[in-house]
Amino acid sequence: MVVSAPATDYDIGYRELVVGENRAAIEAIQKCDELPSTDPARQINLAVALARVGEYEAAKERFDAAARNAERYELETASGDWVDSRVLARRGLAMLEVGKFGSMETLAVR
Image (tube, rainbow, N blue to C red; front, side, top):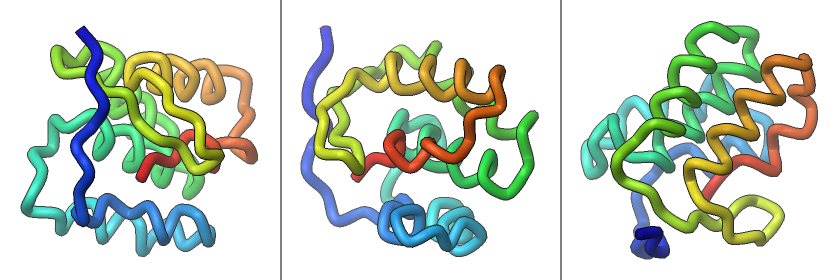
């Protein structure tokens, strides 16, 4: 069952990702104490930030974890679309595989 992610004010690096401050996004995500590291939105945003700074293997690990996560949510992306967290994670993995990192901003979730 897929549910919409609860509305939160948790800082999972969204603002930083949107403006391209990837290192700041990584720091914000890692400092987020309100959500577990296993949260799909947190995993996806961290993967996006890591891919943007060239840490592809670490990004792959986070996307893979989100794709296999028992929890799944409908997440709002930067483009305003609502997408299943597992689908987003699989998109991220596919983008990594073909070296298409420039459009990863559309994967960033609020």
